[in-house]
Length: 390
Image (tube, rainbow, N blue to C red; front, side):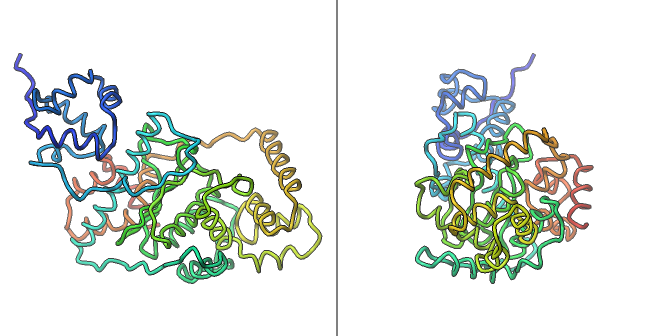
C-alpha cells in the first residue's frame, strides 16, 4: 500500500497558527488532534510533515483553511484576539470552553473579512457607522444618541408577546445600520456556555460585529445587542461574560455599569417608564410596563430598582417568585432549531443577504456560496434563501 502523501507545509506557519491564531498550548492542541505532543512538535520544527489528511484535521481544529499552512511565512496583520478585554475573571473557562470561545471568535473574524470581500466584488460602498458616545456622557444622553442612530421608538416595536420575533426586530434594526449581528457557531460541538461568554463585539470598521450566545434567552440576547452596541459606540472590542441579572449587587467595571445603564435606558426609557408606573406598585402594573416596552418583567423590575422606585428586598422577593413559578410550570427547552435556521442565525441576515446577492450577480459560484455557510448541503441554502426573502 502506498504511503500517505506528506503535506509540504511551512513549519513556522504551522506553529504560528497554533500559538497566535487559535492560541492553544501544544498539549491541548495535540490532545484535540489525538496525537502525542512530541509528534506535533516535530511537524512545527520541520523534522517531519503531517499527511494531507492530518493537515485537513489540523485546519479544522485551528479554524482555518489548509492553504494558510503553505504560506512562505506567518501573516503579520492578524490580531483578532489581542485587543479583547475579558471580564469576570472569577469565571475562568476550562480548556474546552476556552477553545470553543476562540473558535467562535475566529469564525466571526473570518466572516467579517468575507463580507468585506463581497462588498468589494459587488462594487458597493461600505456603510458608514457614525455612532459615537463617550463615558463622560450621562446614560440618558448616550441612549438618546443610540435611539436616534437606530431611528426607533417604543411604539414601533412588534405588537406581539413572541420574544423571538422581538429579538429578530432588534437584530434587523441594528443590521440595517451596517452592523453585523450574528450568533455562535451553527456547529453544536462549538457551543459555548453562558458563564464563558454572553456576547462579544468587534468594534472595527467597516462592519462592526455583535455576536450573541445562542444559549441565552431571547430577552438576554436583546439586552446583549444593545450592550455591545454601546461598546461599539465607545470604540472598544470586548468579550462579555457578565450576568446582567446580578449587576445591581456587584462591584463591576465602571465601563460595564455604564453600558448596562445605557442599554437599559434604550430599551426602557426612564421618562416613559415613570409615566406608566406613577400608580401604586402592583404585579398588574409591572405586566403592563413589560408589554408596553416588549421586555420581560425582570427587566422592568431591575429598571425600577436602579431608579430606586422599589427596594432591593422587593426585587429579590420578585425574583424568588419568578423562579418558583418557572419551576412549577416545568418548562423545558424547545431543543435545537433546524440546521438552516442555525446557519442563518450564526451568519446573520445581513451577511446572508450579501452572500446571496454576490451569487445572484455571478460574483461567486454555488460552491463558494455553500462554503460560507459551513459547506452545507444545497437543500439548506434554499431554506436560508426562503427565510431571508420572507
